[in-house]
Image (cartoon, rainbow, N blue to C red; front, top):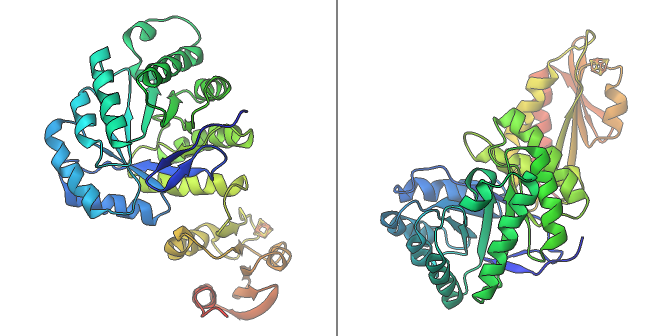
Length: 353
Ligand code: SF4
């Protein structure tokens, strides 16, 4: 795929070979600036590079500006639909505006929005969604991926005619296959950074799988510059899944990897709950900007336990009497599962040389 222009979103470079950034979106009440501020900070601490907030109406603009003031240094995007005056009011207060040509009506609205973007040097994302296409394209009967890209191409062209060049595009569908085809086509036609993700992908379990399948396939072929995993419910799991996708395909340092055997009739301990406990205990450390690179294995018994422990930094292996803790392939202690867990966490948090 060809290279794209680079757009700077509050200090995060997007496109042109820059590292793939992770995005998510707040779902707190946009009129409650304290709640939104807390969620923006939480998402950023979890590893979200760029956080989007909804600004649903003009009377929500003061709260959004207050959020901006209270989250200085965190790249922030305003999501605007229906009323272009909201986009204009947010320009200059925010690092990017997301608009959807399917919900912003009329050439005058586009012209006035473009003028405000240019005046303030604010980048824009043209976010095309299959559920909210411009009227003429919504009625089109052609291939849905081609229709999405037609809407994006038209909007990019309109923006450029008005002088706006700092443009990011997304073409999203709730269908993983349509999203994949649309992103491939958009990347071949447009030279702007591409935001990729499956919209309305589902619950945390099913949505994570759909998102991972599409995002990893696209990024592995060099398609996409920034990602969002859209999951129903709290946005925090979106960030964790996004990090795991990037780590799994080698686009981010892996951080802390907790591996666990599936267990079988030989298992002497519950690997699922122990591994989940370790992940929860290390969540903050793993989400930090410079997480330690660590592989931790949780193995049900000694059939594969010592072998996996040899390839891990640390391992808890089930034994008939409880558990053994391995550090760098050697047995460090034997005792109960709780004792092994405590010692493991102490070892991870030990002062570094
Ligand atoms: S390590 Fe032991 S418990 Fe885990 S799957 Fe293999 S044989 Fe079963």
